[in-house]
Image 1 (cartoon, rainbow, N blue to C red):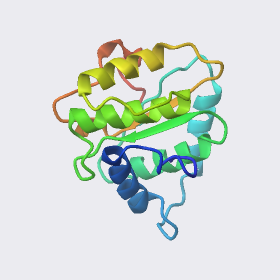
Image 2 (image 1 turned 90 degrees about the vertical axis):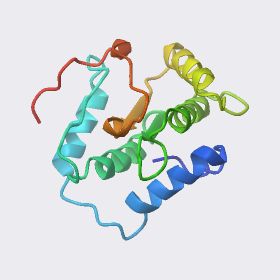
Image 3 (image 1 turned 135 degrees about the horizontal axis):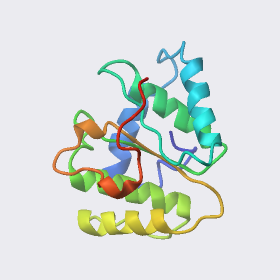
Length: 167
């Protein structure tokens, strides 16, 4: 999910939920298997510059979060990556922690010094600035669990397809 040492560098408000999420989904001994086809499809998507967005859809409890967390951790070896789990259970569904979590991680991969803003409006403005900044290499930003967001949403202008193809 995050490179070694990156979690410790994040603010406490962000670090605790990400650590709890990682313990639940990525710890040694947590079962995960039989997803080679899905992992290969995500790798193929990442390798295709014509497809800037992907949407993973399935019923609750089908393993989307585990799949995306493990794939993002693996993909981070190839491309700067951010994984932001939006989760009621882990305390990241409200606007303030979600925006701060995303801003803090984007700052990390952009090499921006200092701490992410704690104000959700300022954090969102920084997110938009960081995402709009030209980069030398592609970036991977995974927002998991957007259906759990409380009081906020991703704007329609994020250039994602209006409806996903059937999975």
